[in-house]
Image: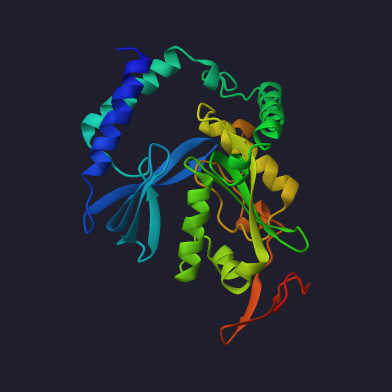
Length: 288
């Protein structure tokens, strides 16, 4: 079976498997420890499903009460331990792709694990240029697209948050709003939740880089990091899923970094008795 057929079969089996999950089910995933792009340790964790979100191929996840850590987590479909027959299909697909590399993975050598930085950078610049045309569409500006987006201070233009969505960005914005109104962390982003709680009417959302569906996930991660460096968001406090130590796999190797090193622009909110009284850098970022 070729890679195309294996991909279709994997996607079909993944959708069918995810649809069988129910609230209250016990699910598992692995906590992985990486070093030099190699998994050096993994620990099995269990959780009880509290919410199920099936928003299409690139946005299926569950919210679980983690029985191992006592915390609540978001586990994507690719994080979860899957049925063995589905794992076997995924292994076959990985083997097919490693034997016959295609254009989507051409920027990374499977034999040497060396990133072709020139190819990656050229691809990024091409996506930025293409986005200029896409952003002329009112539909895209309203978030009816996939890609990378940001939250900004309406008055100063300062960037609050950078995120990405593989489903409709406008849907993700609604999800953010729903979560902060319930005073729950947004995608494990408690600082963003605080900004939206205290200053929601002073924040606006913008599409930064709309992309077309065939763009490789690794490339989207790379683009997100480049825009992160450009806009310097102050409320991103969680290193994104899909990166190695806070770097896209297309950025080469690197040592593990702390959140403060990964986002040196982070500005926390000083809160006293449920009221905002200032910011960690002592600047007045919003009216309160």
